Amino acid sequence: MSEDNLIQGNYIGLGADGSTSLGFAGTLHSGDGVRVTSSERVVIGGSVPGAGNVISGQTGSGVSVSNGSGHLILGNLIGTDASGLKAVGNEKAGVRLAADQSRIGEDGGGGNVIVSSGDDGVFVNGDGNTVAANSIGIAEDGRTPIGNAGAGIDVYGNGNRVGGEGADLGNVIAYSGAAGISLTTFINENNRFLGNSIFSNEGLGIDLIQYEDRKTTPSITGVMETIQGSVTGAPDTEVLLQFFSNTACDPTGFGEGETYLGSITVATDATGNVGFSAPFAPLSGQPFITATATPVGGNTSEFSNCIERPQDSVEILSISPDAAGGFPTLTSGGSIAFSSISVGYELTSDNSGTLFVRVFADNNIDSVLGEVSQPVTSAGSLVQFNSLVA
Ligand SMILES: [Ca+2]
Ligand SMILES: [Ca+2]
Image: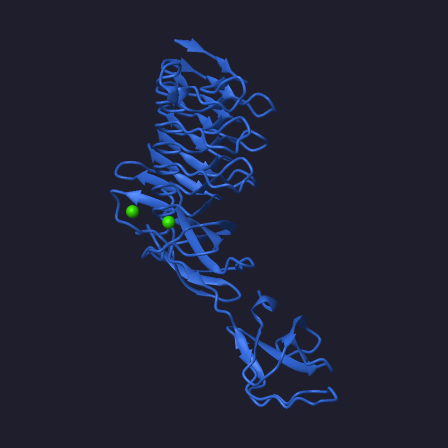
């Protein structure tokens, strides 16, 4: 057994130019790029510039660790060329970690880019491991899709963490050929998936296997000024709820979780139920809301149902344009209810035919939420208010 080995700054599976794949040629690099079989505390890469390796073009996995604990896999490009933008995939997993108390990625420059794998991006089998701050299925620029063929992260074991509660600990997990995160839960507990950006995966964003699906998954019932819903779990148990804003819903209607909005903690009652109202609003351009539930000591749930925040509007049923300007006549309504608050409005028109709508909270002209304007040419024009009360 060896200990405290350091593997840094190498091109593994690439020519010295940093882009030519040697691995798939099948002669120089068959098997895994970096293989750790009987060691403790091996460091592969690092958080400072230049410490990371480029590990690509292998017929096996990019990194394969089959034993030990305390390993660090940081700041590597796994499945790309040296630019981090072009796919030079490994044929099996990007990182295969069968170990305990080890870390794949960390904030502050230690995240790995793990893309273009022929199997899972990351496969974790062990206890107490952390996978944080990595780009999984997306290139180093944070935009270019280079998905992994299997799950983004496949987890077996207990007490593993994907992401975290601190800023910048979340992983981006996107464009996988299967689930974003897959967890076999038959005997595995206390695996927490927090603060990640999970989207555009072929399967579910989070898929629990061998488990009564969605047993503890929150159910969202409404999205207005707050996100309302309920969750069911063990009696008298604290549950961490996380909320996400999405460009689109998963085709199943559950998940995924593109942009993390924030979290609240609730406690179930003696029957295991609790309702919630969370003070988060969807982001502009991402009107679909989802959530996860993570009970104390338990596994994070699959993603909740996906609900679009209603686009409130007022229809101007009849206007009387005044060629000289002035106020059009509004013939419908006088206030619009947005769930619990009532929003008054005032219509004015300038000489060019643009309609301005000013929205007040609680029908109070001293409480202006904002203004929108748009050209109005005919009865039936719509003025969207939604952005003003988000
Ligand atoms: Ca999906
Ligand atoms: Ca499932």
